[in-house]
Image (cartoon, rainbow, N blue to C red; front, side, top):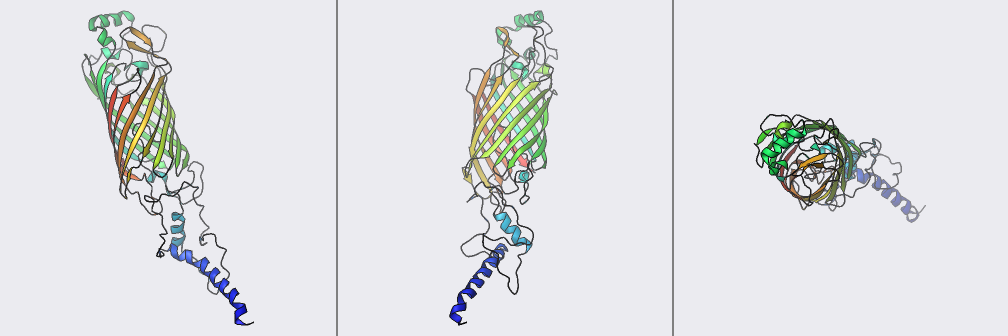
Length: 417
């Protein structure tokens, strides 16, 4: 056959062989002059897509080309090349498919990828961390509402070591002695320092414990300082995807604080809840929560025998934050949140006596900023939220007539391990 007739078939064979071999060689780190094989997450985050299913071991990863025809010396890409290409194709948060559903993918643990998010809303992302938090709240007027902050009439016994009232006559005697101002149980302000430790043995599950120390500054009664009610529990992310976490959280509050001093509630409480985290765009994120605080063995109203003074309280919130400044090792994220409480039952002490707390609704606006230090540009698995440590400073203000406090300052430091 003349050379001109067999030339096309020769050229096709050579091109097909080249397409089957070149991608494997690039994966070894031999980058072309115009292409970086590893996306740089901080500058050009990848779109939220389903993680790439890994190719079988020893099989070259190709960009859709047909397998190369047999050649005299077949070339198989090394394991390192396959892994490098596989990591490069993973989504922005790197990692696995839904951790709860057991999908396939390159195993990069979520709890080593994603760091702190909101300021007041609980994080939906299980991750090992230690958090130090300071709250400074002002103008608290109904602290015994449904026995959420401290027990019924505890406001009259700060520093006295006495027990709550046992009858209406005893309560009336105290009202006559202290007057209507103290009958409100008004607390000018309080401060609380808490240490929180969370450990995530699995990418979608963690356990935690939090121990607070409370200082209260009542309007007229003695001040008090000591341990508050500790809480412990666990998180389980039933949806754990690179760009979304939906998590069941369960807390148990243990009455370690002295209720007679206004430092605790004098009863245990349970709090199941659902937490949410969702990436909305390149640097924009949503977070939310819905929790139900359930008191166990709370006190009985002294004015209404047989009626429980404590009552269920729904706690809900939503917020957004945006990575305004983002470099390889530093980020600044303004955060805006709205958090609410609705009391479903129970009572509260007021200047007019004991009244129902049912249907009281409190809504707070909370704004702040988080400063993160971390690795936001790690090849093949980095994340815009890959904090190693972060600092949050925020302010809360009540928007409703009912309130726990009118204003609050929060500062917290988180270290991820």
